Amino acid sequence: MPVIRSIHRTKSEISVTLRLHTIVASTRPGRVGPVVARWFHDIAKAHGGFDAHLVDLADFALPIYDEPNHPRMRKYEHAHTKAWSESVAAADAYVLVTPEYNFGPTPALLNALNFVYSEWGYKPAAFVSYGGVSGGIRAVQMTKLILTTLKVMPILEAVVVPFVAQQIKDGTFTPNDIQKTASKEVLDELKKWAEALKPLRG
Image (tube, rainbow, N blue to C red; front, top):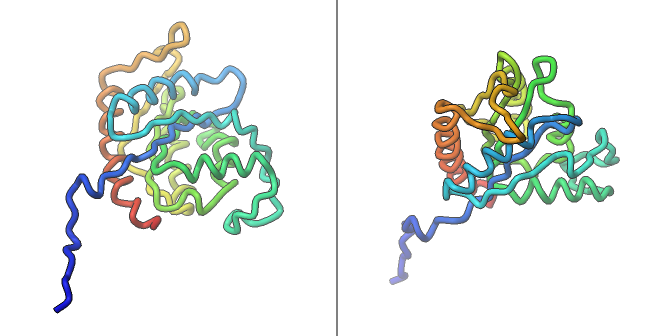
């Protein structure tokens, strides 16, 4: 009689280290994105649920999309595309640290999202948005539409920073109590989704 092996596994057997990329989504000179992103990255490292990495779009110097082949094909010809593809593919989850440009996402973020395709799929994303009175939330809502087309799951939980300049002094971002609480909620929820979606990527 054949032996039927149990398909049930313990938490330790299915537990894996999830890689989180906190992405600075603005590249303009004088931006405050890196300051806010460093704060959240430190929170992510202390959280314990992720192998946390800070990623700056400015480091990749992506031009306006310049690949001759459709991104679905992953036949990249340029070094900047290959480097960006490798970075996106390596992550299990993303946090996009973004301001708002004319009620929408930054051109740099929109371009970066469109540069690759399959590398994004079946992963969750959260937002840390900042700006003036709206705190960047209008850009977040527009970006979520693009993410779903890339098969990314945008989660509800978010950190919002209105009037961001008031919370930055000497190059350091100081969160308020609401933002501290929200950052933990973001990471907890992001971990659940990252664990749930990882098997879909084989």
